[in-house]
Each structure stands twice: as structure tokens, then as C-alpha cells.
Image (cartoon, rainbow, N blue to C red; front, side, top):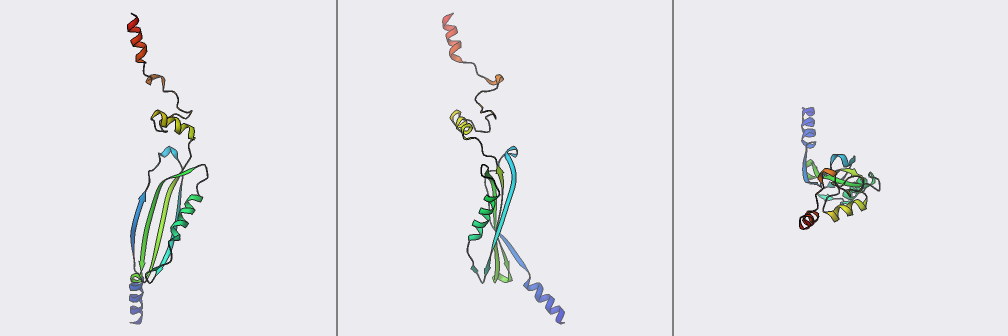
Length: 151
């Protein structure tokens, strides 16, 4: 009888409930632009409804930033904040998990050319994108008008 009471008490006290507080996603880069997937997570305890700071979020962020080399940038960030409740709120744990992609940084001059022409930098070719492909060039209307006036 004592064992049964112990097992029931242990089962009663060991149950937990997890709640997802928030999920955030930024724009995911194209597959060809993704270098590596990086991830970081951190947690903080809450005892008797008293949280012990929110520095765990900054810790996870710094860990994520440290995994991506300097000329690269981080895109496609998925962050998830969750709480796990143990012992009816007497003990809780908050956790933040982040996943992202490390993307190679583009040459700023290519971006400037793309913006000045009204194109996205993805539409530009790798050599700088100054010229359109031969089949897609438009003929100049001014030359055809001059030709008609001269006839």
C-alpha cells in the first residue's frame, strides 16, 4: 500500500504542462543563398512565481550571433518562447529557442546598382548585372522615329 501511495504521489508531482508563449519568423532566404543552419537555446527557472531575470534571451541571441562569421549575416530567424510548468506553478522554466540561416553578405555595389535600376539584387547577375541578356533587350523608340522622319 505504501508503494502505491508513493507511485501515485510521484506521478502526481512529476506531471508538467508546456505552453508556447510566442513564435516569430523573419523572411526565409532562398535555398541557394543559405550557407548553414544555426541554432541556439537558453532557459531560466521560475520558483514560486518569481522569475530570475530575462537575460536568458540575450544569451541565446549572442550564441546565435557567434555562430555566423562576420562577413555573413543572419536571416530567416525562427524564435520560439515557451514555458514549462512543474508542480502546479511552484516551479516553472522559461525557454527560448532560435534557429536561423547564415547567409553570405552581398557586395554593396551590386545592391546599389540594383536599387538604382529598380531591380532586386537577386535579379542581377553575379558579374554585377549591368547588361540584360541579348534576347531581352528593348529596341530604342527614338531611333525608329528618326528613321521614319528621315524617309
